[in-house]
Length: 288
Image (cartoon, rainbow, N blue to C red; front, side):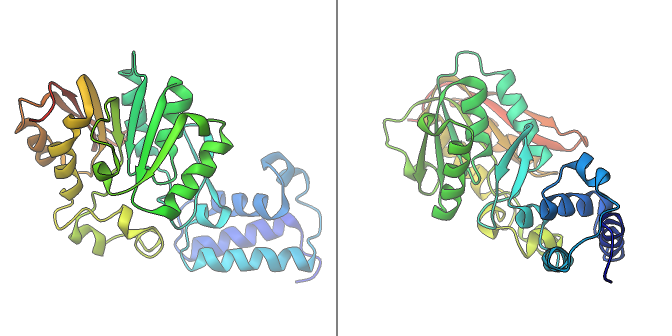
């Protein structure tokens, strides 16, 4: 295949992805070539007639092979956009998804007067970093995974908010001093049920961290922990915003509505596809 042009290589890569059943084959092929050749979209078009060296073809072939093995493109590229910003990712963290932007959007809409925020299960730090940037507030970000926290710290440094975020390793609230008190809580907790875990796409089930996905047999284990403990660490009238799985809206609402002395205004909002996605509640008082 000597003398192959960049444009021909792009078409070949897209065809291989499409034949493998990879969605958005054209887009993924373009992003992969841009990464390998150090080009933006315009540069890829401008140089499409240029011949590709054997060395460059070999580098691309190695990455194409990884993608055909269903490794997510974000892990291959090492980053993923969220809220219009690039974030480092690795197999230690979930890949940011558009649904989580709905959680952030809802939190920002109700964030007047927020000076301190808590992000539980921070992963790559997308929510903690975004809150620090958008609200100029102090954020405490907790994760049980040391590897995930290293990725999150890199992202905080990348976006210039490292001094505003305190990273703590631990299992949700156990990482916090008992005297902690926050104006806002945000979380994308593990919420995939056992049945759903068995049916995950290979990109998710084989490559993304199960620790950040699996929420117990019914997917609600972490939501139960949040409902039972959140108000101990929130000031009165502080709000919490949690991502939930599709079909979990009624059960998740009941967990918080069952504690009327702690929570009020329990609501669920849909994502752009119309699926229930964000649970929000107002803290009325601390748990006794």
